Length: 135
Image 1 (spheres, rainbow, N blue to C red):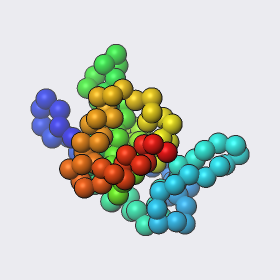
Image 2: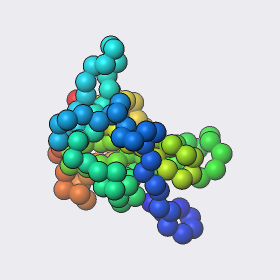
Image 3: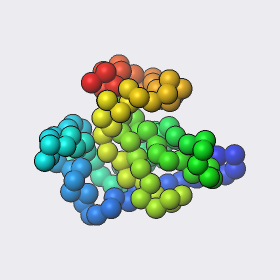
Image 4: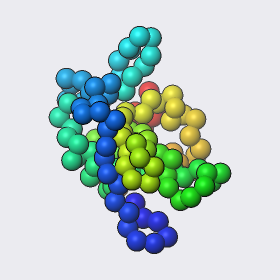
């Protein structure tokens, strides 16, 4: 991610090691119902090192124009046809990502959807991301 100055490198830091809420035994992203709540599950074979590379190299930053400072409120990460939402764990320093619910993506402004799809196109997985976004 770049800002108006030097390149910023984000850390990947789950709240706990491993992030039990978002990890499962499958090697693909998906969702499970847990206590009546839809929970995004990350692939079991996705390491924290890979996640850190993804948030830095395959993401679209979302900066709330009403928030103070240039730090993104979240990043939208694209990996293998899946869209992940990365939320800050330490503001301005680190993020934790999880599969984004297509229902939440539907409410994104068109500009952000277009940026996510443009990134997916560059990565060669636009069709997969379009399928993910449509639920």
